[in-house]
Image 1 (cartoon, rainbow, N blue to C red):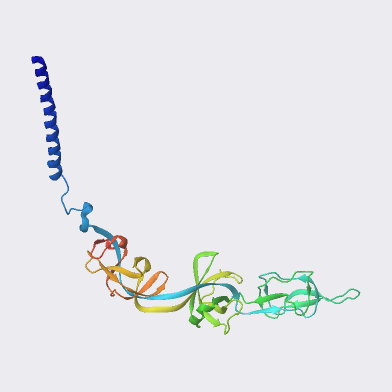
Image 2: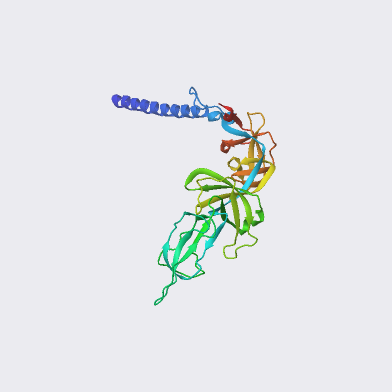
Length: 318
């Protein structure tokens, strides 16, 4: 009996100890949470990882300047001789002999081909086709065996020393056309080479089928690389826009259809400026308002900037 009482007392002590230990553990955990983890390093309130507002952004800037924007249009053209003439036979018949080929040099009076006007049952002497002027054969002559009449063009003769370009301008641009406009001419055969030309003639009418107007340009200088018949790419400069600051369009930030630039006046901080845009030519916009001449405008690195942000201008680093 006495042993049973001792056993019960021992069991009660053990259970009481477990209960006390559990309660102490819960209390300790709650105290630790409220104190923010006493004894362990932690982040205080208001601290921002990565430096927060003290972040410095590396940027590239340009000085705002007034420049001339040369507007232009792109079209295609063909290189031709400035003067040429078509050659016709004096009598109809069959070409029996051709004495020239494309590019041949001829003098006035030289025989180009012979035409046989004979018909079955009759015989006539061969009739010569002669060159009316001196120059070069600029179109492929008719071949032997072809039948011609007095209205058939046997070939064309031109002066290949003096070349021009015939090009066609879409109707929407004809308001910008005028004599003396300058152009840059390029060819696939001469990659990177540019030949200068000037508009010398403008057609007085618009082609109703193509809705284009024909223009003629003369090369400013003769060049042995140029040949009649070549296909040309024409960059025609039309209008000059000046007396305004111009900044590359990639520097602009668009926000709800409003445009902004980041400007720095001290080289260390930026201001976000709303700007008014003018003409866009070749990837550059006129800035009509919002930036003054001589101010530095951020053109690279602006995507992570905000008004008042700190910068490091690396455009001046050599």
